Image 1 (cartoon, rainbow, N blue to C red):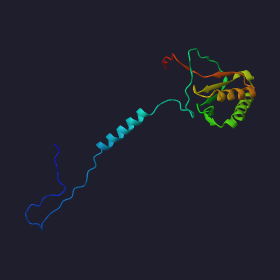
Image 2 (cartoon, one colour):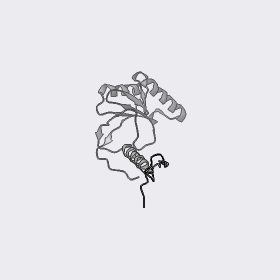
Image 3 (cartoon, rainbow, N blue to C red):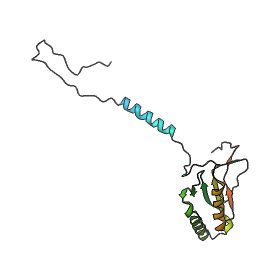
Image 4 (cartoon, rainbow, N blue to C red):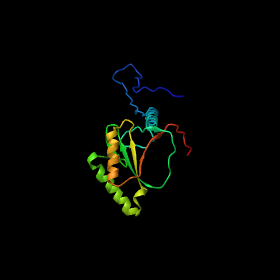
Length: 163
C-alpha cells in the first residue's frame, strides 16, 4: 500500500534549534507523460490520410463508363481550377509546358524506339477549370504530334475494390 511521505520531516521535539530537515529525492512519474504521448500519436494517426498527394488539388468530372487497361506510356497533365498545370506530378509554368511535353516525348521515343501512337496524354482537369486552360493543353499536345489524348474522370458508381 502506498503511503504519503512529506518532504519535510517534523521535529521530534518542540525545540526550534534542533530542527532536522530531511529532503527526499523527487520522483518522476512517467505515466502521465506516456498518456500524453499516446494521445498525440493517436491524433496524428487519425488526422493523417493515406492517399496519393498531388501538387494541385483538382476535382475530376464524373462519368459512368469502363476504364481501359493497356500498356502505353503516359504523359499526365493536371489542370487546376485556377489554371495552373502539373506535368507528371510536378507543377509547371504555362510558358514551359510545351517545352517539357516535347522533351518527355523525345525521351520516351528515344528510349523505347516505339511509334508515336504508344504515347498517351492523360488530361486530369478540375471540373471547374476553364475551357481555355484545357484547350491550351490540347493545342500543345497537337503541336508536339501527340494525338492519343485521354481525359481522366472519376467513376460515379465506384465500388470499393478488394486488395
